[in-house]
Image (cartoon, rainbow, N blue to C red):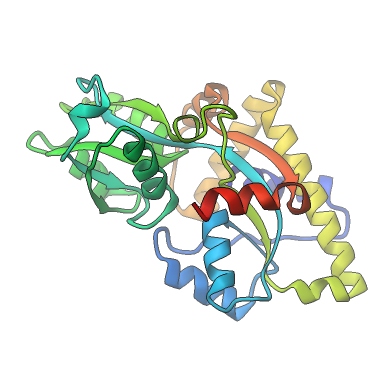
Amino acid sequence: SIPLLVLDAKQKEWMDGVEIQTTVAPAGDPGAMRALLHSKEADFALFNALGGAKNYANGLTDLKLMGVHIWKGVYLLTRENVENWEELNGAKAIAVPGVGTPPQIMALKALGKHKVEMNFGGMGPGLALWTALSKEDSDILAVAAPEPIVSMLLIRQESEGWSNKFKIFADLAQEINPEAGRIPLGGLIMVDKAMLNDANKSEAAKTFIAGFEKSINYVNDPANHSEVSELLVAKWKEVFKQELPKKLFEALLSSGRIGAEYRPAYEVKDEVMDFWEK
């Protein structure tokens, strides 16, 4: 989560007396995430609202949704020559970071509206994905993926001169919910709601949530995009062990492709349940 990484970088400035450490669960591995949640090694987790609901239903009842902070940011990319939904019928596609994750689920909802079916495989972000998409004889016609994977793909295909190039075909939040143009995607989860019964931990949690909301607002302000991009280059390397160029984050932040706004759970709980239970 971009806001979390920015908060991590500016925590001494924004969260007096509260320190955070950011760790990463393997992308596309629900079992690894569930194990981390079960161990309660972390106080908070950021992941998709669907995953939170599933883990709660599967017995992790100490989880508590504190808020939703991402409302758009998942896209369907296709080869540049694709002009309509019908051309995708029966085609081969990749869901990033994996099958059964929100990008595939959202793509299936959008495809269903157009009575189109695609054959999805799953793949995490990384060299194997770029190789599969870029090779000349690739038969992959579409990719369902979140940001910043979308920006990584668009920049990489240009810098490396891929023979098969992709374009953004559909904003899946807009396609699924055209009236609002958004759906509840990224959630802030308290891993053990018993924190709320401890005065010191509860106060620290409030400080963290306030800092997280401040970070979202800071990231959204165009005046901060250059600074934020520099912070993200350093934090992305530290946390994800990947070196990404500043221009990638600048392009992403200015594109408007991530819809970030913190809304507390009590305001959006019905919206979350209505969408993911359909």
